Image 1 (cartoon, rainbow, N blue to C red):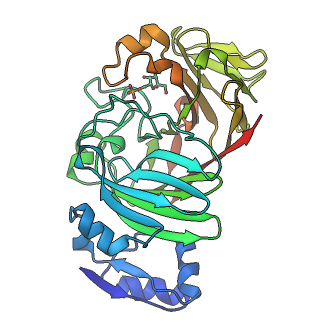
Image 2: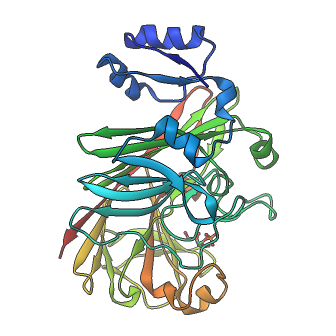
Length: 350
Ligand code: TA6
């Protein structure tokens, strides 16, 4: 099981880890933890592919009263967060956040009552991770929509309490199954901090010898009372590609409102956006870093008919606002390099 618990100065640590024949599964920032003299848990390479059940995961990673691993819907392993700052849920399936409730606030994320909960299928709602392509794969109509990482089981790396809440880190990496769709070597780390803000970081590391080229999105389903009454601010004057109209390029005038099927990719924008919900009396803010596109989506009635994993009328109860790098903003990463896209959600009364 755990092959080594290593302490020591940062540089020495990297060396110690490499010489122990283990694999570093975390980013350097975690080593500050080591500098403070806490334990640094290293997984032996053979462990990384071990499919652990929730009980064993909880025994290894659980933090009493703060972060436990349990069997969630469909028997899928789920991390449940309950801290003074926030409650939340994150599945190993797709490293998928399905709930975030900051203290004093109602649930922020929408989750379909008809979602599927099984390997190979995407969860409908919460925050799906789209990678390494968005929507269909340009050169392969049989490839899964939005890539393959949202439908597979990720590895849990850590659950750590901190001043801003509780950080959950998961990772997945290339193997023979990913290679089938995408001949590239990568490691993808998803680090989510559940607190009065929800901070998400998606880190792609090129572990291969050739350049990677990919799209990415944090496909957030914001819960709203009635999508027909909300407004999105922060995109006025921004160009967008309308996916309901052959991706014609258009310009946003004023706030975004939803009165029909909407699937817009706002381009060259790093702006923060505010989703104002007068009925719930709240605004949900999205701030992003290293994300040059923002997608706004709602299927409306007609689009919802085609989504069997969405409950009756539930299309009214969410609006997706997605920090992303898609189309012209796709990322190219040289061997050994890494790229981090981050998004912070926060809620306030109107
Ligand atoms: O984010 C918008 C979008 O790309 C739409 O085109 C629509 O397909 C939506 O995602 C949902 O995709 P999914 O594969 O989860 O049904």
